[in-house]
Image (cartoon, rainbow, N blue to C red; front, side, top):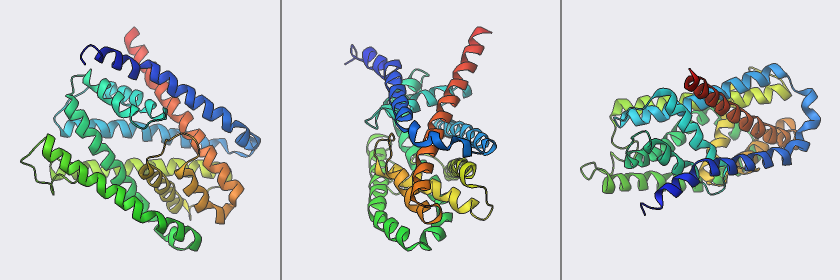
Length: 309
């Protein structure tokens, strides 16, 4: 196994990054014709602000990861953490759902973080994604409850979503109790195992703020095409985060039009029509991807500049 380890690390490195970029390129090319005809209608100032907020969102995701590691008494360089976290996140565009997590293990083990710590930190991050996005999503429930069709569809998803989340939290508690700390009770291991109450609150607040930014970034994409309204700012921002949460719970591949886009189309159709909703679902995904690639390129440029100095 030790002989194979260098080859596994190589595979999870740049070859998978190239594959991820190929899948991203294919997605962008496949959907270009669906959105290019409406480029002239887009308000650039809102789109630009959206991209800036997505930069902040990706920064906060990396910052949250660093805070998780620090809660486990692991110290890593701030910039190196941001860069390696985003490099590993790029792998999620490769079908299979596990590559970003495997890459995370490789990237941070190279920084001296124990693989077991990386493993439990990934489980904690997933919990924080679920809890942070859920807390902000609560604000969109009036929007959902006031739409009979949307309410019926969403209610149908709730049992499965809750079951998946419950199984994950219980499995995390059991795994942590068996593999990491047998003295920790299952109840205490349910949410963010092995950290203090104060750290749990801190991490949850950071995560919630992160997904508020995600929702606002998506709303600005919406505003760039359909106009800005303070009346629906909170509801729609929260709803876009809710769509992400439902998609995250589905465990489908993140490329292509999936559960997240389906929820968006369902939720917006009554207000702006199915055609406009479909356009937004595709366009928001494209902006999301371009923003992430731009953010990664910025980190890479900064890394190169520091090396040359």
